[in-house]
Each structure stands twice: as C-alpha cells, then as structure tokens.
Length: 229
Image (cartoon, rainbow, N blue to C red; front, top):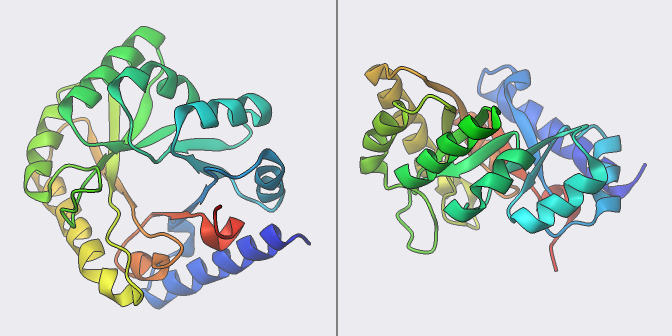
C-alpha cells in the first residue's frame, strides 16, 4: 500500500470517528482530496485508493490534469474564480465552491445556459473577514443568495468557508458554527431554487471540528498528499 493510500485510510477513519462523535452518519461527509500542485501519478494513486472527488484551485492546472485523468472522478473548483474564466470552469468542474459575488453568479448562469450544462455552486462566505481571503461578508450573504435565487441555470447547493489557521483547531469552531447558523438563517428564508444541503468547511488541520459543527464536505490536501513545495 502506498503512503497516499495509507493517508487516505487514516483520514477516512478520522472522518468516521468525528461524525460518530457528533451523532452523525459518516456517509453524510464527502471527502474532497485537494490536488492543486500535486502530480498526476500521485492523483492516480489517490483515485486507486478510493478518492472520488478532487479539488483544484487554478483553471489551467486543472485543465491539464482533467485532460489526462478524465471524469472518472468529480472535479471541484475550490479556489477564487475570475469572471473571465467561467466559460472554461463550467466545462471542467462538477461543482464550484467559490461564488462570492452576483457578477460571478450571473456569468455562470449565462454560460451554463449557452452550454446546456447546469453546474452546482456553493456561496463562499468570509466568516473571519480576513482581507486576504475571498468570500462575501456574513452579513451580506443572505442578500447575495436572494439575488442568485432568481437565476435559473445556477444550482446553489450550500455554503463554503475557510476560517483562519490556528495551532489549536478548537479555535476554529466558532467560525464553523457561524456558517452552520447562517445556513439555518438562509433555509428559513425559503428562497426558491436554493438548496442548503452542503457545508464545505474544514481542512487538514481542523476537519474533525468542522464535522462536529455540521460539515458535509471537507477539503483535505496535506493530510493526504503531504506538505506542498
């Protein structure tokens, strides 16, 4: 068994343990293996070890990998998406985690209408209000969702966030809790065309806390592929 396969097994066991601790079904939690900067050989090892969703941050890098690996797995766009890259993105990805402005949502809606492909998206929320991170501010998120709800070719399936990095993952809990509470607030608005079934939150250093707070998608890179260059 390769080191990557060992790592995936360990991560899946930790996901299961965290879900059970929270009284949740481990099957509710999807693992996105974050493969940005990772080579095709390592990605194929991960697929052989049972990974079914890969997360990429850059269009060109993802395009080259998808051309070689194909769509035997799902591909998720987890990085910041520029409006002028939307046409490429909707042809490459099954889900876009990083919709944070109405202009981007409108462009996705327009391009999917032209291509006949409907793409699932998550609204990225900058819960921590860090200037270095993308995402709509929490207090503007409901307004954004209400506008996106009027678009017919874009399928909002939930929310995504990235809290600050903490040495103690417990310190990330309030940020995950805040996103879960926002999900509840949006559900109570009963917008048409909006589903809040997904919460994409938690990475290698804090995913167990995220699962305890309701994450349905965890984005794991380092714990699977090791430290990046």
